[in-house]
Amino acid sequence: MKRSDMMKAINLISIAFGAIAGTYARYLMNLSLLYTGYPIGTVIENLLGSFILGLLTGFFAWKKPKEWIKLGLGVGVCGGFTTYSTFAGDVISLTQHHLFWGAIYVIVSLVGGILLALAGYLCGEAAGKNLVKVHEVK
Image 1 (cartoon, helix red, strand yellow):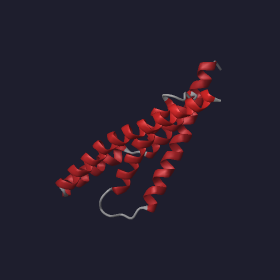
Image 2 (tube, one colour):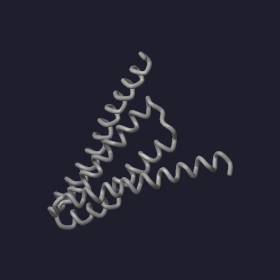
Image 3 (cartoon, rainbow, N blue to C red):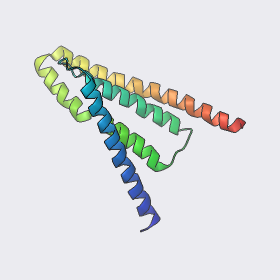
Image 4 (cartoon, one colour):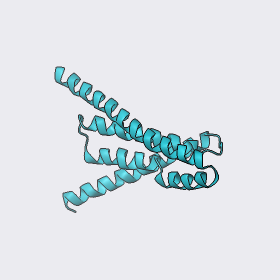
């Protein structure tokens, strides 16, 4: 097996295990939340996932990990934790019954996700810069 094929296999395995972890975390979060008729679990998961992906992206801009780590955490864990398909289904369901709440759900999810991804990026970037500075001083 060529080295490039081996790296592809390692990346794929990392994504798969990350996706299992992210999906399981989403499942546990949904179990812990009371059903209110409003998809609060999906909102929390997608907003938190956006923040975490932004955090990782900002951090990895300064502290370069191996590719399989980036893919496992970003594509795997964050991809498994967040859920666009449930979001889309929730939008359809909410707008059929309560157009106002469906619109609020879309706005909170999209605008909130972008803002939290940006906030996460800035936090991750600051942490990465500080870590690089600490290692330069030593």
